[in-house]
Amino acid sequence: MSTQSTCRVCAGAVTEFVDLGTQPLSDAFREPGDTSEEFTYRLAVGSCADCAMVQLMEEVPRERMFHQDYPYLSQGSAVMREHFGALARRFLDTELAGEDPFVVELGCNDGTMLRTVARAGVRHLGVEPSGAVADLAAEAGVRVRKDFFEEPTALSIREQDGPADVVYAANTFCHIPYVGSILRGVVALLKPGGVFVFEDPYLGDIVAQTSFDQIYDEHFFLFSATSVDVMARRHGLELVDVERLPVHGGEVRYTLALPGARARSEAVVALLAEEEARGLHDRAVLDGFGDRIRAIRDDLLDLLRRLRAEGKRVVGYGATAKSATVTNLCGIGPDLVEFISDTTPAKQHRLAPGSRIPVLPPAAFADPYPDYALLFAWNHAEEIMAKETAFREAGGRWIRYVPDVHVV
Ligand code: SAH
Ligand code: TYD
Ligand code: ZN
Image (tube, rainbow, N blue to C red; front, top):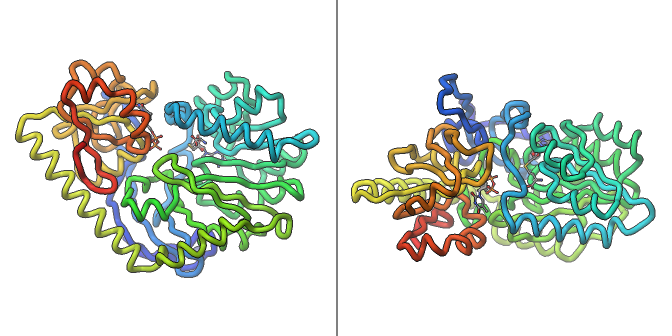
């Protein structure tokens, strides 16, 4: 076990600051009868001394995570459907308003963003390696290429379709350790005035709220403006805009352009200054984050054990990838959380990774309501609370663990 690794952005030395233990693949929901050995890896996070990039210490091979049966669906949240619809409309009104525009999306998943572009009759391509979700995008009228995006993919797209006005990636670029190949591909694919726009969970929000469950196999990088700025320059691009987003518990949408093509916005200057002022990348700040994670782990286990002793029923809400980090860090199994309610067909009637907690369709949640619901999908709290008013009226209570353990 090494507490040093090599930075995937600059080859500098990465020093570990938090260890979340042995973990399964966060999206590997198992058939109940499956007795095969579960793949595990060590989930730990470090920071590069040279370029500040925060990243996992160990990399999981991509084919283990993104394959035919990858279960996650972008369309699982009404708020996210609206979020991506609004962004597609904004692209259509701005970057894609010129002559014969073309947009490429990495990790288009079920096509939630691109279906609006497709309906507008604008040239587009989704690049998506996970078979079943790519099929859903195609069924929705989206043009999809079933592939991992990399430099060769980019060159072949450019050859076939010409250069792009926009390359876009939501909750995907942070999943990809091989940044050099991706950014060479992006540079090769963009028109001179084109942009690479990506949005991912923001290190600043993760540290501020102690949302440690944003750390799991698929989230290889935890980006900040500081680290993205350095990464962009190293790879022949410039960070020209940032926008903070409320979705998924706090994200930043970064815009990169070719050098000299666009002026840097005030928002970039301000966010860089804010990160500097709060010492976001300082060792002491990152170590404090680790201390708070341990406190949440202890408090959550204490609460769940107390409720079990009192004979209360506790059910999980949302079989998120994030929940794998929580259950497996804390050692929470079906003895503490009876089952997890989830709307995703490919997760239902399976067992959650590591914890082996059964996942059941939402009908089970109300049949009858439990005493407590542990909100694993806390990033969708508003949407979920709004539709689960009957649970509250029946006397049910929510358990939250971000930013600390509390009952509401
Ligand atoms: N953009 C969607 C999906 C995010 S899940 C959303 O925000 O909801 C991440 C997606 O990235 C998965 O569908 C996965 O298959 C895909 N992915 C992983 N590596 C990729 C790569 N190298 N190129 C393109 N897509 C990739
Ligand atoms: P999400 O938090 O978006 O992502 P991740 O898996 O990356 O942590 O996952 C939300 C999960 O919660 C997804 O499996 C769908 C489920 N869900 C429900 O069961 N009910 C709901 O009302 C919503 C919004 C999500
Ligand atoms: Zn580095």
